[in-house]
Length: 281
Image 1: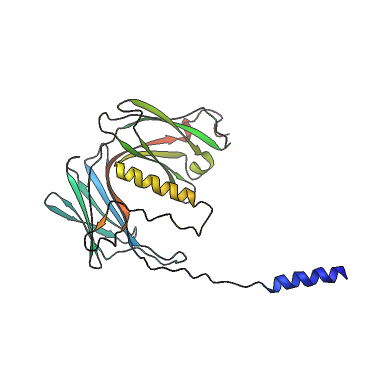
Image 2 (image 1 turned 45 degrees about the vertical axis):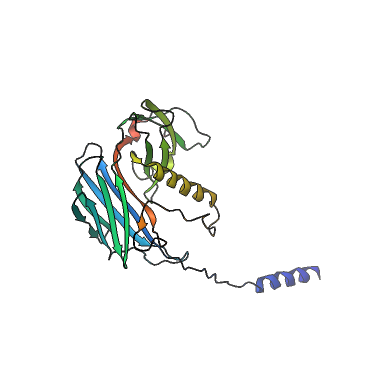
């Protein structure tokens, strides 16, 4: 009799299963602009890359990239139009930079809106060395990298470090930093990476250094903190919309998301073959 009673309860709860469709409100559609002018530290030319898209509902699988915008950069009195790359879904152009005192003005015209931003080229120091360290991490698969550079004196630099690629999805890790305690000095910092992820595809990891403004440094820190606060909670919303340095000249309240950066960069490739014996055993 007891067995029949338990069976009835089980069938009752099983029969009550129901698929619920979640409908989310989506009204505040905005332009998303990811724009940069990047110049290798030893190069004369720079690459302009602008990615345009629009915000979409959470569950949407549609392609939100934008290809019909009029996108250009004003360099002194010259208007440089960008070409759309259909395959990469970006607007791009190679230009010759003048110097770090010149204003680089970005314009994106779309749907009767004009989006605008202005930045100067940020100079950066060269990466001097990257080596494998000997310190151990609490995570058994993590290994230490030691990165050495000499901070440029008297500028008050803010840096963006990029490590990767890692895994099969070609992703990168990012780290923002400033020179508060190393002004004008040579400095070596330690960074731990997961060797099973970074060296899954090939035997080389790339470390890249570029510069950011103080505002961009704060912007990236806010984005990082919000992403961390929402970790594990896929339906969480951001605490607030984070505004970048791009404005809408036509309708100020309809500002875009994203950022415009102009910077030098330097990179260093570290091979798995340079590791001490036993590090990858």
